Image (tube, rainbow, N blue to C red; front, side, top):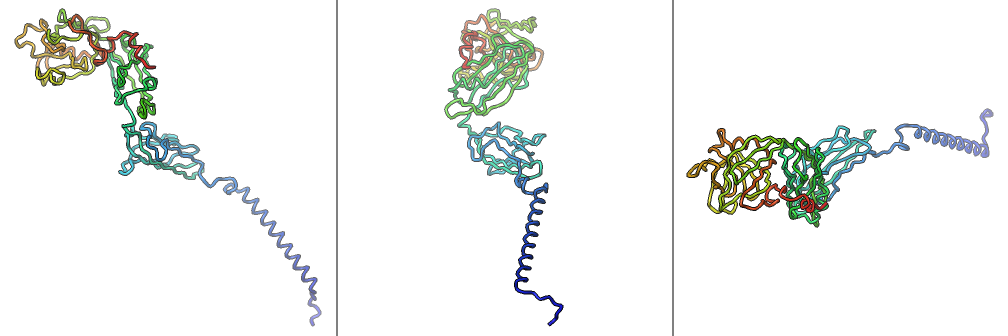
Length: 410
């Protein structure tokens, strides 16, 4: 037996084992505590930093929608910036151009969407820490059967005469006229009060009590997108239209004297001879507004109820006064068997001015055409005919102000 080797008894061995276990347990606890402290103080730890992106993408059209707006569809993001948006026509894959805003918070198409069309949007974004987010939607825009639009005049950016009303013609019958009219506002820089008037259930015109003030700016706000015009039928238009009122020009046709006097800004420019309607086809009386201008146009009597009485393929310098077919235009055929121009009414209700074939040359018709704007007023008086109906063309000036305002739904 080696006397220098310590003798270990069972009790001593047990006590040593317990001590070692205790030391290991203390070490384990210490390591656990250090690990927890390290994670808590580490800026990239999971305890305080979310694993998912805080960027929230919102697509205006809900996934699966069948009545999405053709104007308001777009993408927005909160707590982040958009990185990419792709919009396509579902099925065909045709791309829809669009642009992300400078701040990266929104995207919208560059053009108005088509009605009754299925689209797909896929959008991605990142939050401030670079974590990505994504959203998708497939939807269909409101159909033409369930929506209405209004064709309007005048066009944005145009310069018109003082008689030009704002006129809407809707492609569906409107039963809730108040809702529709209240979402169209027309304001003038002149401060004139502008009131709407309904002609039936598809036409809505706006005008002030007197002609527009020369040089004024008129602004029309159309906010019909989503407005219910009839049961199950909603508007789709949202835009702002502006136009300018030019100089004041009002021309008076006196059928009794067969002359027309042109007055601009209160000064007489010229008096010219005219040829009015024949005794069988008289010319309307009243205030009429030039609604269209054509250097040359075809006039066929069969299109306005006169059968085959005339068909002239090249009527020069024609300007429309009524929707039923009344024009003020050049007349190069008058001299054939008639007295000097301005001595006899020979037309089917139009107002004729001396002209030559081909719309060339220095003639009264060309002068008047060149000096007229769409929206200028032509007043006809002393004709044996009746006064033109207010809705026959843009001729609501033939209605009293009280009657006009009585036709407003707002």
